[in-house]
Length: 313
Image (cartoon, rainbow, N blue to C red; front, side, top):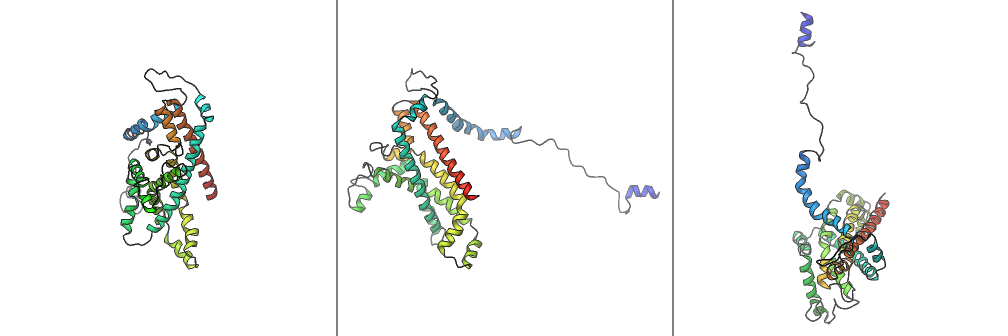
């Protein structure tokens, strides 16, 4: 009886002894690409494949052909002939030089101006919310509208700029002033998104760091140099990299302002590719320009990120 009781109720005698719990049986884990996961991802993947990956692959394949405009034009595979021609094309290298000046200048000036504006908007100012909204207005305007507006500002006869300075300078048709004038518009257009990103980075900096260096007697410049900039480094690397890619691929804004003139002084690489493809009908050569510019941009961007990573380590 004693053995039966111990087996039934346990040695403590406070109830029947239970065996180990066993949960419901589970099958093997499935990844996001199996079964229902893939079906759920299809609505998002199909537009990306159709409108992004598809044209990209087609453009790369087109760069190795002699495709031209025309109803009965025949297309044949030419291998690397387009790339060889590109390397000896002086017009391309001139547009590439102008594009690098444009991309680097706009990116650097955008960053400096946006950093100053972000530091200002991060202060406890009156109507700070209204100021932040107004700072984003250029970002919300389409590039075509921005280009038309600045053409009126730069107008030699009735422009706002000449009215302020009492001059009659033709800013967009002067060989020495056209590119700087267009760079100013590019900086004004790209400042909002850079300012928003930098402002978000500033607000994420812990206040304890500023309090700690203030106790040591650090002034405003030392707080900025020793706390703000190091904390913003990842944000700065990310936004300047994206800005450079966006700027070097700019087309619509410069096209509306100058259409690449005067005399090709503002003909960016994308404008040169547009002219080769849609003005002269050399689709294969225009695709080669796009592939070459993409490779160069990725190489420059990769070198920049590699140096930033080394400095961070």
